[in-house]
Image (cartoon, rainbow, N blue to C red):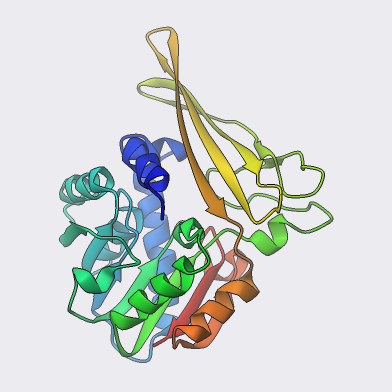
Amino acid sequence: MSESVRAFYDGLAGEYHLMFADWRREIARQGEALDALIHRQSDGAVASLLDCACGIGTQAIALALQGYRVHATDFSAPAAERARREAQSFGAVMTVEVADFRHLGEVLTQRFDVVICCDNALSHCLADDDLPRALGQMQGRLRSGGLFLASIRDYDRLLARDGSAGALDPGLPGLHGKSQDHGPRGTMPQVFDDATGRRIAFQVWDWAPDGRSYAVHQYFVQEFEGEHRTSHHVSRFRALRRAEVDEALKAAGFRDIHWHFPADSGFYQPVVTARA
């Protein structure tokens, strides 16, 4: 992953929660959905869990509160530091450190019952060798028979020729327009009101000519004492289709690969599970 991706999450660390109407409530909702899915897919009791793309702690905190022994890593130091602080605010017990999920073996020696990688993080594997390398590192941190779980945007649906993408993420209530040859050009604005005032969150997407990747421009417009301030963060994602993810999982040594969709899992993105 490039330094521009790191800069995106470094800058977003203080504002990531603004994508949600109520981030703390979202943590509880995601924790319930992921806990149920993990137990349905596990081969026995599960206790230890690695979240190798924890961001500010959304899923790591959620699962620590569900009783898992969680170790969380992220390659953004500001995001990892915020995850540590937020865990304390929730009363969640977990450990946090900085690590690039393409090089987990350089900082971690232990193996876990479950490894998760959520919030479309795999789509930052832009180079052809990034995804196989990352999945190989994740597989190497699982005990034999351990469970891998990742969530990703539904790019198969998003890039469908009929343009029927729908609402794919909590921050994407509706996708706006469609470029001539590729995917949507952005998201419709979400408007939230809370104790600090009104805020608006939306994205603009710029597709590469080959349609295999796109830049996301994340905007927040916040009201402070009658004035409005705008912040802007940009990063690039790879539009990974399910067949591409399946192939990379098999190459990394995973088996029993299954996809779970929001209507059944209760999680906001499609989730892929596999065993080491």
